[in-house]
Image (spheres, protein in one colour):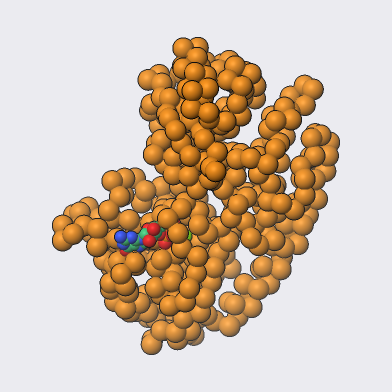
Length: 382
Ligand code: GDP
Ligand code: MG
């Protein structure tokens, strides 16, 4: 039985910090976390109140809805202060979480690798630490439910000092794991195999394309963040030869900066790539905004100079309708595909192949945006 949940927040949260985003997306996130959204309480207001975030009337409304619908959870679309959390939980008598916690919860579910698990626990603890006020965090917040799920390695300790020492030991572990990963990557680079990273907004069809390109089965489902840890597989291209295709974690609108930092090594795949394939869901109403979100994250990761091929996906959903003009104008190299139905996958493959082959320098080395490779970009290519 999924936990019943209510969504709450401001109608237009885009004017507020990084916590914005639409309620549809929040609902998708909640669904991914295993909750059933029974109602939304949206306030037409743009200034939060310090004590409850939303106004008193809305708090009452939420309380009544929670009782009437047997919801045990209220998910806010905005980030809440420790005081707001406490006041809301007291007033509503149910668990209250915010968008960041919901995302962390999903990350916890999806973390499979050792590194992913460490990163998730670290991010959760760092999120918790400043929220432990006075006599300690409310115990109810550390159960096994949505928003408090751990990656399963250790039980969270309800103590600041312990959390701090756990954080530093996790950081040490992370460094070691990162070292091992870098060695692996070095080896990969030495072998001269170009890396193609599939990036894009969550649910755009990255994993489906990864599967289509590598023709092997990988985990694809209609859920946000179906992949946390990068998957990579080798393919063979006529001109380039062997290449590595990497599936990456989905980007979302206003992914809290703290989480981006915590997951940087996962997203770092983007940095090491010689070529990015940006998968775009052309059938999505917010297609354009999603593209710019993804571009922002690529820029933040320092990969703006890496060549990009745009894969205009889900063209089957357009039912013969035209591809928007701006999409062609703003994307130099674009291929219309359907990852699900395998349309134009071979065409995309040959565009990838040509792009990679054209990046080869005289020495035969692939020029990309590698951290240790930046200088060679000016060296010119064939
Ligand atoms: P990811 O989050 O970017 O990895 O997206 P997935 O590959 O997991 O796909 C998300 C959802 O979109 C799944 O339900 C896919 O079946 C669906 N999907 C992916 N590509 C296409 C496509 O070309 N056409 C249609 N109609 N659906 C697609
Ligand atoms: Mg995926």
